[in-house]
Figure 1 (cartoon, rainbow, N blue to C red):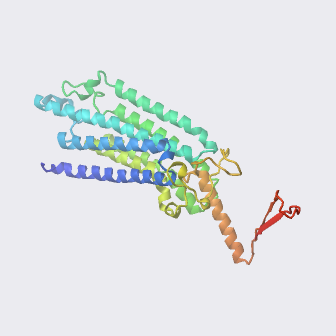
Figure 2 (figure 1 turned 90 degrees about the vertical axis):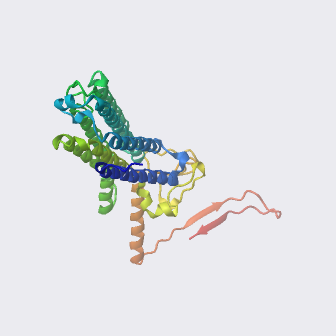
Figure 3 (figure 1 turned 135 degrees about the vertical axis):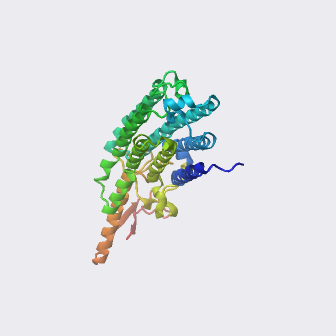
Length: 378
Protein backbone atom coordinates (compact mmCIF):
# COMPACT_ATOMS: atom_id res chain seq x y z
CA UNK A 1 0.00 0.00 0.00
CA UNK A 2 1.45 3.32 -1.10
CA UNK A 3 2.04 5.91 1.63
CA UNK A 4 -0.34 8.86 1.83
CA UNK A 5 0.80 12.05 0.10
CA UNK A 6 2.08 14.55 2.65
CA UNK A 7 -0.72 17.00 1.83
CA UNK A 8 -3.35 14.32 2.50
CA UNK A 9 -2.13 13.16 5.92
CA UNK A 10 -3.65 15.99 7.95
CA UNK A 11 -7.15 16.03 6.36
CA UNK A 12 -7.36 12.22 6.34
CA UNK A 13 -6.38 12.06 10.02
CA UNK A 14 -8.88 14.75 11.00
CA UNK A 15 -11.63 13.22 8.89
CA UNK A 16 -11.40 9.74 10.41
CA UNK A 17 -10.92 11.13 13.92
CA UNK A 18 -14.16 13.08 13.56
CA UNK A 19 -15.85 9.97 12.19
CA UNK A 20 -14.65 7.87 15.14
CA UNK A 21 -15.91 10.37 17.71
CA UNK A 22 -19.20 10.81 15.83
CA UNK A 23 -19.70 7.04 15.72
CA UNK A 24 -19.02 6.74 19.46
CA UNK A 25 -21.58 9.47 20.20
CA UNK A 26 -24.22 7.81 18.02
CA UNK A 27 -23.75 4.38 19.54
CA UNK A 28 -23.70 5.79 23.07
CA UNK A 29 -27.07 7.28 22.26
CA UNK A 30 -28.35 3.95 20.89
CA UNK A 31 -27.01 2.13 23.98
CA UNK A 32 -28.66 4.68 26.25
CA UNK A 33 -32.05 4.23 24.59
CA UNK A 34 -31.70 0.44 24.52
CA UNK A 35 -30.97 0.35 28.24
CA UNK A 36 -33.73 2.83 29.11
CA UNK A 37 -36.65 1.54 27.05
CA UNK A 38 -35.55 -1.61 25.24
CA UNK A 39 -35.24 -2.08 21.49
CA UNK A 40 -38.95 -2.89 21.08
CA UNK A 41 -39.87 0.54 22.41
CA UNK A 42 -37.65 2.48 20.00
CA UNK A 43 -39.23 5.58 18.46
CA UNK A 44 -38.68 7.16 15.00
CA UNK A 45 -35.73 9.25 16.22
CA UNK A 46 -33.96 6.06 17.35
CA UNK A 47 -34.10 4.64 13.82
CA UNK A 48 -33.33 7.95 12.11
CA UNK A 49 -30.05 8.24 13.98
CA UNK A 50 -28.96 4.87 12.58
CA UNK A 51 -29.82 6.10 9.08
CA UNK A 52 -27.82 9.25 9.79
CA UNK A 53 -24.84 7.12 10.83
CA UNK A 54 -25.04 5.13 7.57
CA UNK A 55 -25.08 8.36 5.54
CA UNK A 56 -22.25 9.77 7.67
CA UNK A 57 -20.20 6.66 6.91
CA UNK A 58 -20.81 7.07 3.18
CA UNK A 59 -19.79 10.74 3.11
CA UNK A 60 -16.60 9.96 5.05
CA UNK A 61 -15.67 7.21 2.58
CA UNK A 62 -16.41 9.53 -0.35
CA UNK A 63 -14.24 12.25 1.20
CA UNK A 64 -11.41 9.75 1.65
CA UNK A 65 -11.59 8.79 -2.04
CA UNK A 66 -11.90 12.45 -3.03
CA UNK A 67 -8.67 13.32 -1.20
CA UNK A 68 -6.63 10.22 -2.11
CA UNK A 69 -7.61 9.58 -5.72
CA UNK A 70 -8.17 13.08 -7.12
CA UNK A 71 -6.26 15.20 -4.63
CA UNK A 72 -9.34 17.22 -3.68
CA UNK A 73 -9.66 18.65 -7.20
CA UNK A 74 -12.97 19.78 -8.70
CA UNK A 75 -13.92 22.21 -11.45
CA UNK A 76 -15.01 24.92 -9.01
CA UNK A 77 -11.31 25.64 -8.37
CA UNK A 78 -10.57 26.41 -12.03
CA UNK A 79 -10.72 29.85 -13.62
CA UNK A 80 -11.86 30.12 -17.26
CA UNK A 81 -8.22 30.53 -18.33
CA UNK A 82 -7.11 27.47 -16.36
CA UNK A 83 -9.87 25.35 -17.92
CA UNK A 84 -8.37 25.99 -21.34
CA UNK A 85 -4.96 24.82 -20.16
CA UNK A 86 -6.10 21.55 -18.58
CA UNK A 87 -4.74 18.70 -20.75
CA UNK A 88 -7.39 16.49 -22.30
CA UNK A 89 -5.85 13.50 -20.51
CA UNK A 90 -6.47 15.13 -17.11
CA UNK A 91 -10.06 16.19 -17.74
CA UNK A 92 -11.57 12.86 -16.59
CA UNK A 93 -9.87 13.31 -13.21
CA UNK A 94 -11.35 16.79 -12.77
CA UNK A 95 -14.76 15.53 -13.83
CA UNK A 96 -14.53 12.61 -11.39
CA UNK A 97 -13.52 14.97 -8.59
CA UNK A 98 -16.47 17.24 -9.40
CA UNK A 99 -18.86 14.29 -9.27
CA UNK A 100 -17.49 13.22 -5.90
CA UNK A 101 -17.75 16.79 -4.59
CA UNK A 102 -21.36 17.09 -5.79
CA UNK A 103 -22.22 13.72 -4.29
CA UNK A 104 -20.69 14.95 -1.05
CA UNK A 105 -22.86 18.09 -1.21
CA UNK A 106 -26.01 16.02 -1.63
CA UNK A 107 -24.98 13.63 1.14
CA UNK A 108 -24.15 16.55 3.43
CA UNK A 109 -27.66 17.93 3.01
CA UNK A 110 -29.13 14.46 3.55
CA UNK A 111 -27.35 13.88 6.86
CA UNK A 112 -28.09 17.38 8.21
CA UNK A 113 -31.78 17.13 7.31
CA UNK A 114 -32.08 13.60 8.73
CA UNK A 115 -30.63 14.92 11.99
CA UNK A 116 -33.14 17.79 11.99
CA UNK A 117 -36.01 15.29 11.78
CA UNK A 118 -34.26 13.15 14.39
CA UNK A 119 -34.18 16.13 16.74
CA UNK A 120 -37.83 17.01 16.12
CA UNK A 121 -39.00 13.47 16.87
CA UNK A 122 -36.92 13.62 20.04
CA UNK A 123 -38.50 16.95 21.00
CA UNK A 124 -41.91 15.41 20.38
CA UNK A 125 -41.20 13.10 23.32
CA UNK A 126 -39.60 15.86 25.38
CA UNK A 127 -42.55 18.27 25.22
CA UNK A 128 -45.42 15.79 24.98
CA UNK A 129 -48.51 17.15 26.68
CA UNK A 130 -47.17 20.71 26.77
CA UNK A 131 -48.44 23.65 24.73
CA UNK A 132 -45.36 23.78 22.48
CA UNK A 133 -46.09 20.26 21.20
CA UNK A 134 -48.41 21.77 18.58
CA UNK A 135 -45.38 23.28 16.83
CA UNK A 136 -43.64 19.94 16.21
CA UNK A 137 -45.51 18.87 13.07
CA UNK A 138 -45.41 22.32 11.44
CA UNK A 139 -41.65 22.36 12.11
CA UNK A 140 -41.33 18.93 10.47
CA UNK A 141 -43.28 20.25 7.49
CA UNK A 142 -40.93 23.23 7.27
CA UNK A 143 -37.87 20.95 7.36
CA UNK A 144 -39.27 18.69 4.64
CA UNK A 145 -40.25 21.68 2.49
CA UNK A 146 -36.77 23.20 2.88
CA UNK A 147 -35.20 19.89 1.90
CA UNK A 148 -37.42 19.71 -1.18
CA UNK A 149 -36.37 23.22 -2.21
CA UNK A 150 -32.70 22.22 -1.99
CA UNK A 151 -33.32 19.13 -4.13
CA UNK A 152 -34.97 21.34 -6.76
CA UNK A 153 -32.03 23.76 -6.63
CA UNK A 154 -29.58 20.91 -7.22
CA UNK A 155 -31.64 19.71 -10.17
CA UNK A 156 -32.52 23.02 -11.84
CA UNK A 157 -29.77 25.61 -11.26
CA UNK A 158 -27.52 24.12 -13.94
CA UNK A 159 -29.15 22.59 -16.99
CA UNK A 160 -28.26 20.12 -18.32
CA UNK A 161 -27.14 18.65 -15.01
CA UNK A 162 -23.99 17.13 -16.54
CA UNK A 163 -22.52 20.59 -17.10
CA UNK A 164 -21.73 20.71 -13.37
CA UNK A 165 -18.81 18.40 -14.13
CA UNK A 166 -17.70 19.82 -17.47
CA UNK A 167 -14.13 21.12 -17.66
CA UNK A 168 -14.06 22.76 -21.10
CA UNK A 169 -15.67 24.73 -22.55
CA UNK A 170 -16.54 26.73 -19.45
CA UNK A 171 -20.21 25.94 -18.64
CA UNK A 172 -20.75 29.17 -16.71
CA UNK A 173 -20.62 30.58 -13.19
CA UNK A 174 -23.45 28.49 -11.78
CA UNK A 175 -22.52 25.20 -13.43
CA UNK A 176 -19.91 24.28 -10.84
CA UNK A 177 -20.45 22.12 -7.74
CA UNK A 178 -19.29 24.91 -5.43
CA UNK A 179 -21.50 27.75 -6.60
CA UNK A 180 -23.00 30.57 -4.58
CA UNK A 181 -26.63 29.63 -5.26
CA UNK A 182 -26.15 26.18 -3.74
CA UNK A 183 -24.16 27.35 -0.74
CA UNK A 184 -26.11 30.47 0.22
CA UNK A 185 -29.51 28.82 -0.32
CA UNK A 186 -28.51 25.86 1.83
CA UNK A 187 -27.18 28.23 4.48
CA UNK A 188 -30.39 30.29 4.60
CA UNK A 189 -32.66 27.25 4.83
CA UNK A 190 -30.31 25.55 7.29
CA UNK A 191 -30.26 28.54 9.66
CA UNK A 192 -34.02 29.06 9.43
CA UNK A 193 -34.89 25.46 10.27
CA UNK A 194 -32.23 25.26 13.00
CA UNK A 195 -33.61 28.39 14.66
CA UNK A 196 -37.15 26.99 14.63
CA UNK A 197 -35.95 23.69 16.13
CA UNK A 198 -33.88 25.37 18.85
CA UNK A 199 -36.78 27.60 19.93
CA UNK A 200 -39.31 24.79 20.46
CA UNK A 201 -38.25 23.52 23.94
CA UNK A 202 -36.85 26.80 25.31
CA UNK A 203 -40.17 28.38 26.48
CA UNK A 204 -41.14 25.41 28.66
CA UNK A 205 -37.88 25.37 30.61
CA UNK A 206 -38.55 28.76 32.22
CA UNK A 207 -41.54 27.71 34.39
CA UNK A 208 -39.75 24.64 35.77
CA UNK A 209 -38.82 24.80 39.45
CA UNK A 210 -35.12 24.11 39.08
CA UNK A 211 -31.92 25.30 40.63
CA UNK A 212 -30.15 28.04 38.70
CA UNK A 213 -27.32 25.70 37.74
CA UNK A 214 -29.64 23.02 36.41
CA UNK A 215 -31.76 25.59 34.57
CA UNK A 216 -28.65 26.96 32.84
CA UNK A 217 -27.59 23.40 32.03
CA UNK A 218 -30.93 22.67 30.35
CA UNK A 219 -30.81 25.89 28.34
CA UNK A 220 -27.30 24.99 27.15
CA UNK A 221 -28.30 21.39 26.42
CA UNK A 222 -31.31 22.29 24.31
CA UNK A 223 -29.59 25.35 22.83
CA UNK A 224 -26.69 23.40 21.38
CA UNK A 225 -28.28 23.80 17.96
CA UNK A 226 -26.73 27.27 17.92
CA UNK A 227 -23.35 25.58 17.40
CA UNK A 228 -24.70 24.01 14.20
CA UNK A 229 -25.66 27.47 13.02
CA UNK A 230 -22.18 28.80 13.79
CA UNK A 231 -20.55 25.86 11.94
CA UNK A 232 -22.76 26.47 8.89
CA UNK A 233 -21.82 30.15 8.82
CA UNK A 234 -18.10 29.40 9.22
CA UNK A 235 -18.29 27.03 6.27
CA UNK A 236 -19.50 29.85 4.02
CA UNK A 237 -17.03 32.35 5.47
CA UNK A 238 -14.05 30.09 4.76
CA UNK A 239 -15.18 29.03 1.30
CA UNK A 240 -16.32 32.38 -0.11
CA UNK A 241 -15.19 35.06 2.33
CA UNK A 242 -11.61 33.84 2.76
CA UNK A 243 -11.47 32.21 -0.69
CA UNK A 244 -10.55 28.82 0.81
CA UNK A 245 -12.58 26.68 -1.54
CA UNK A 246 -9.94 23.98 -1.27
CA UNK A 247 -11.08 23.15 2.29
CA UNK A 248 -14.83 23.17 1.59
CA UNK A 249 -15.00 19.38 1.83
CA UNK A 250 -13.35 19.38 5.27
CA UNK A 251 -15.72 22.06 6.54
CA UNK A 252 -18.62 19.94 5.32
CA UNK A 253 -17.36 17.02 7.44
CA UNK A 254 -16.78 19.29 10.43
CA UNK A 255 -20.32 20.61 10.23
CA UNK A 256 -21.66 17.06 9.95
CA UNK A 257 -19.77 16.09 13.11
CA UNK A 258 -21.06 19.15 14.99
CA UNK A 259 -24.62 18.30 13.90
CA UNK A 260 -24.21 14.72 15.16
CA UNK A 261 -22.72 15.75 18.49
CA UNK A 262 -25.25 18.53 19.09
CA UNK A 263 -28.18 16.34 18.10
CA UNK A 264 -27.24 13.38 20.28
CA UNK A 265 -25.83 15.16 23.34
CA UNK A 266 -29.24 15.68 25.00
CA UNK A 267 -30.10 12.04 24.39
CA UNK A 268 -27.07 10.64 26.21
CA UNK A 269 -27.65 12.88 29.24
CA UNK A 270 -29.07 10.01 31.38
CA UNK A 271 -25.76 8.11 31.08
CA UNK A 272 -24.16 10.64 33.39
CA UNK A 273 -26.71 10.12 36.16
CA UNK A 274 -26.70 7.48 38.90
CA UNK A 275 -30.24 6.37 38.07
CA UNK A 276 -29.10 5.07 34.69
CA UNK A 277 -26.57 2.66 36.22
CA UNK A 278 -28.60 1.80 39.34
CA UNK A 279 -31.76 0.84 37.49
CA UNK A 280 -33.65 4.00 38.43
CA UNK A 281 -35.04 4.47 34.93
CA UNK A 282 -37.32 2.20 32.99
CA UNK A 283 -35.38 -0.59 31.36
CA UNK A 284 -35.92 -3.86 29.64
CA UNK A 285 -36.78 -5.18 26.22
CA UNK A 286 -40.43 -4.58 25.57
CA UNK A 287 -43.19 -5.40 28.00
CA UNK A 288 -40.85 -7.30 30.21
CA UNK A 289 -39.05 -4.15 31.33
CA UNK A 290 -39.30 -2.78 34.82
CA UNK A 291 -39.58 0.63 36.37
CA UNK A 292 -38.37 1.76 39.74
CA UNK A 293 -41.08 3.94 41.28
CA UNK A 294 -38.47 6.10 42.98
CA UNK A 295 -37.51 7.62 39.64
CA UNK A 296 -40.70 9.68 39.54
CA UNK A 297 -43.56 9.77 37.07
CA UNK A 298 -43.98 11.45 33.74
CA UNK A 299 -46.57 14.19 34.02
CA UNK A 300 -48.83 14.93 31.09
CA UNK A 301 -51.77 17.19 30.46
CA UNK A 302 -53.85 14.26 29.21
CA UNK A 303 -52.38 11.09 30.61
CA UNK A 304 -53.28 7.98 28.68
CA UNK A 305 -53.87 5.08 30.97
CA UNK A 306 -55.55 1.82 30.11
CA UNK A 307 -55.02 -0.14 33.27
CA UNK A 308 -57.21 0.10 36.32
CA UNK A 309 -56.37 2.21 39.31
CA UNK A 310 -54.99 5.68 39.79
CA UNK A 311 -51.82 6.39 37.81
CA UNK A 312 -51.88 3.06 35.97
CA UNK A 313 -50.28 2.62 32.59
CA UNK A 314 -50.21 0.19 29.72
CA UNK A 315 -47.66 -2.61 29.91
CA UNK A 316 -44.47 -1.41 28.30
CA UNK A 317 -45.50 2.26 28.58
CA UNK A 318 -42.67 3.76 30.59
CA UNK A 319 -41.89 7.31 31.66
CA UNK A 320 -39.49 9.03 29.31
CA UNK A 321 -36.49 10.36 31.26
CA UNK A 322 -35.95 13.02 28.58
CA UNK A 323 -39.41 14.53 29.00
CA UNK A 324 -39.60 18.06 30.35
CA UNK A 325 -42.54 16.93 32.47
CA UNK A 326 -40.42 14.10 33.85
CA UNK A 327 -37.65 16.60 34.66
CA UNK A 328 -40.25 18.79 36.38
CA UNK A 329 -41.42 15.78 38.39
CA UNK A 330 -37.87 15.01 39.48
CA UNK A 331 -37.28 18.63 40.47
CA UNK A 332 -40.50 18.56 42.51
CA UNK A 333 -39.28 15.39 44.25
CA UNK A 334 -36.03 17.15 45.09
CA UNK A 335 -38.00 20.03 46.65
CA UNK A 336 -40.10 17.60 48.72
CA UNK A 337 -37.00 15.73 49.90
CA UNK A 338 -35.33 19.02 50.79
CA UNK A 339 -38.41 20.14 52.74
CA UNK A 340 -38.51 16.84 54.61
CA UNK A 341 -34.82 17.18 55.42
CA UNK A 342 -35.34 20.71 56.71
CA UNK A 343 -38.25 19.59 58.87
CA UNK A 344 -36.17 16.79 60.35
CA UNK A 345 -33.39 19.21 61.21
CA UNK A 346 -35.93 21.45 62.97
CA UNK A 347 -37.12 18.65 65.17
CA UNK A 348 -40.42 18.13 63.36
CA UNK A 349 -41.65 14.59 62.87
CA UNK A 350 -43.96 13.52 60.10
CA UNK A 351 -46.16 10.46 60.74
CA UNK A 352 -48.37 8.93 58.08
CA UNK A 353 -51.14 6.58 59.25
CA UNK A 354 -52.84 4.33 56.74
CA UNK A 355 -55.98 2.47 57.83
CA UNK A 356 -57.30 -0.37 55.76
CA UNK A 357 -60.64 -2.07 56.48
CA UNK A 358 -61.38 -5.52 55.10
CA UNK A 359 -64.88 -7.06 55.38
CA UNK A 360 -64.80 -10.84 55.67
CA UNK A 361 -67.87 -12.31 54.02
CA UNK A 362 -67.51 -15.91 55.24
CA UNK A 363 -68.43 -17.17 58.71
CA UNK A 364 -66.55 -19.66 60.81
CA UNK A 365 -67.86 -23.02 62.00
CA UNK A 366 -69.04 -21.50 65.29
CA UNK A 367 -71.68 -19.47 63.48
CA UNK A 368 -70.41 -16.15 64.80
CA UNK A 369 -71.14 -12.98 62.86
CA UNK A 370 -68.23 -11.64 60.79
CA UNK A 371 -66.43 -8.68 62.30
CA UNK A 372 -64.50 -6.05 60.38
CA UNK A 373 -60.76 -6.56 60.53
CA UNK A 374 -58.64 -3.43 60.82
CA UNK A 375 -55.02 -3.29 59.78
CA UNK A 376 -52.86 -0.31 60.64
CA UNK A 377 -49.40 0.79 59.62
CA UNK A 378 -47.72 3.73 61.27
